[in-house]
Image (cartoon, rainbow, N blue to C red; front, side, top):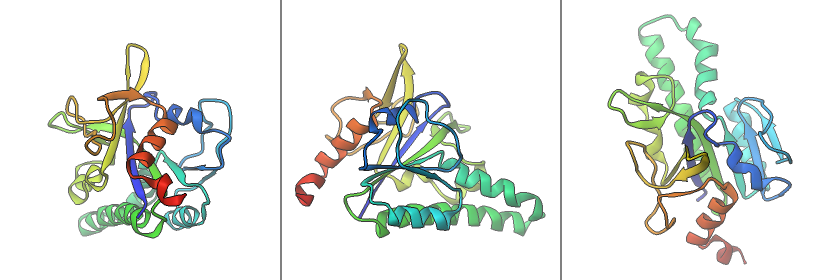
Length: 213
């Protein structure tokens, strides 16, 4: 059983920058939903697609043990933008939202059930604020959120923030955000947004390295 990890944050909060120490490392892979350059020097083996079939094939075929799915929210947005004008109204629109939810739900289930148990997939999304002031992954609105609670599909949710000019991950629920992690995994509420360090911590917690040695 592979582990999906959700990472959320505002634009510029350090989501992509958290990969800075993962460059030039064959253990890491990167799938971009939208094509854009990384905000640091160095390379991570990558490809670009917003096609679920191709995405799942790449995940299955990857030799990397740690994979980042960057801008994952655009899987939903792109599909919506490509199809909403042709769906009309009424039941067709509700059917489209069901399809959007089903596809993303199926992707997370695929990560959990089809990939090896020592693989970690980091699903990176923008954040949004709902009408109650809660901070959550950004989708395309209430109709989709009623179909699927994205953060509920993850045991680990890290939120990127900037505090006193420093980029950080928040590891537990704080200030209305959905951040969460297993008891004892991280020692502090806020940690450096270093994804390599996070990956090492998760692997040590679940004893992946000892299982593979």
